[in-house]
Image 1: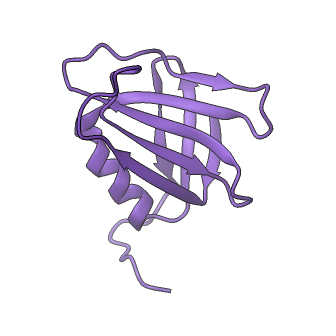
Image 2 (image 1 turned 45 degrees about the vertical axis):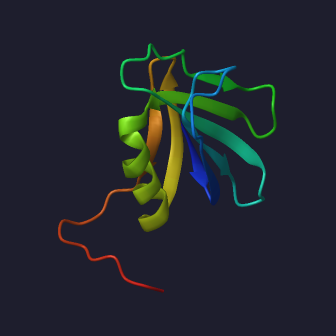
Length: 111
């Protein structure tokens, strides 16, 4: 499983399905050097999802994750509220965002 630290993100929510890809929203992710590390594409709930992919020929590698739009708000919340946050890729059918372990009951505080 590859974990890549996410430092910056940009959200694009479309007013209709993208005619080329069928996705309804996407989140572009960048590392601490502001280099692209991946994109998460969101699709209507009943859509069949394309396979996730990882392109290791790029430096840094780029990961493409496909998921349903019901996950969009949770992923935005994770990016907005958790630090550190990682993009992870396991296989063509499993990937997403993750955090590190936190103690139970830990409060989020402003720094």
